[in-house]
Length: 107
Image (cartoon, rainbow, N blue to C red; front, side):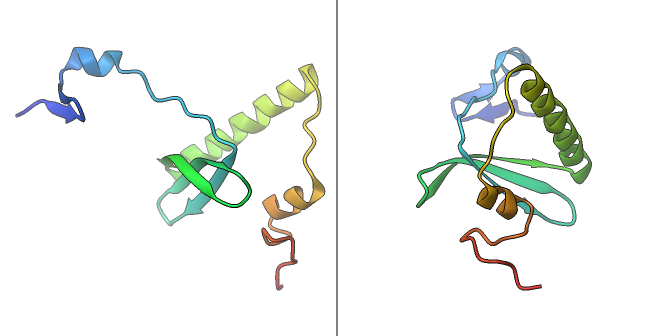
């Protein structure tokens, strides 16, 4: 069996264990779902376009675990620092109450 390779060549156990995950900044996230997984694409957007930096795929169970952790830590942040304010239009869109352009959904 040949050793696993990355873009720089073969990876042995030592180099795989010392590899550091990439760190990226994102001001935009897009979520897609299927019957078997969730995918969150994180990117940098300027209001007109978004350049995806990384996509993270996970099981529905892991997505729910991440959601619970984020709710918990956002709550801790808000209690220790300050409430995080979001514009009402953005809140409506995130809750599925308005389309991204601000128009209401057809129900």
